[in-house]
Length: 144
Ligand code: HEC
Ligand code: HEC
Ligand code: HEC
Ligand code: HEC
Image (cartoon, rainbow, N blue to C red):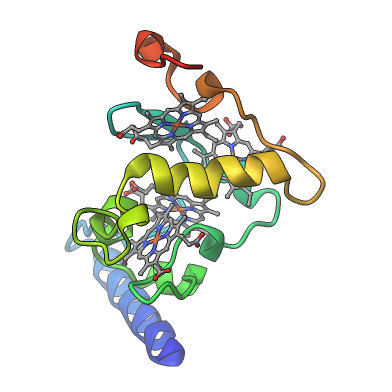
């Protein structure tokens, strides 16, 4: 399974390289760690920067996993052709088998806030609401 994913990734990368090399097609490339900060959209948008996290030596699979909850490697993510499938809410929605894993707040706070509190490699992350949530949205952050 894993090796076939890696193989698919390699074949894809070669195909993309070939196409780009000949200057024929501008393809939406296979998925890589985004260099820019992301805004995680929802009722309370929050910002997230991959670089801050991977610079600590964090594997992709700390956050990204498949439908069986198996952590995704960078290679497996590289083989993803539709980045929309990496969207957390594409699985954590009304269809998710576990009631407690259907809401954005539940999954993001479980993953993000918990680690910030417990720390990683001796470093803690920020835990105030407005450290993650956009300040422009402050009036919606009652209870902070
Ligand atoms: C470590 C980062 C982080 C911290 C700290 C944090 N949040 Fe969040 N929170 C998120 C992310 C990411 C989302 C998902 C974005 C969204 O759904 O709008 C989220 C979602 C939410 C949602 C659900 C929005 C929705 O779409 O249903 C609420 C409500 C919320 N947060 C409130 C708070 C409050 C109040 C605090 C402070 C006590 C807080 N958060 C602190 C990261 C954080
Ligand atoms: C600390 C958590 C975390 C780690 C570690 C992490 N990511 Fe992500 N990544 C996210 C979140 C959150 C999103 C946004 C998902 C969403 O939109 O629901 C995301 C989105 C992405 C996307 C889609 C971007 C887009 O524009 O749609 C790609 C590609 C991606 N990550 C690749 C990687 C790769 C490759 C690694 C490892 C080198 C990695 N990520 C490590 C949390 C993480
Ligand atoms: C392809 C579908 C899928 C995607 C995409 C997905 N998840 Fe999950 N997630 C699952 C499944 C399945 C489980 C396991 C549920 C169970 O315990 O039976 C799970 C479990 C979890 C859990 C609870 C267990 C744990 O690991 O702590 C959290 C938190 C979580 N996911 C966060 C995320 C975040 C954050 C993202 C986006 C970066 C994400 N998930 C993307 C399917 C997905
Ligand atoms: C496994 C641990 C871990 C997870 C998971 C994690 N973080 Fe962090 N995060 C950290 C640590 C540690 C720092 C402090 C880094 C430093 O000081 O160099 C940090 C820093 C940050 C910062 C401040 C620096 C910056 O990049 O702007 C934000 C915002 C942030 N994280 C948001 C998030 C969100 C949103 C998620 C979930 C999608 C998340 N983090 C998941 C450990 C984690």
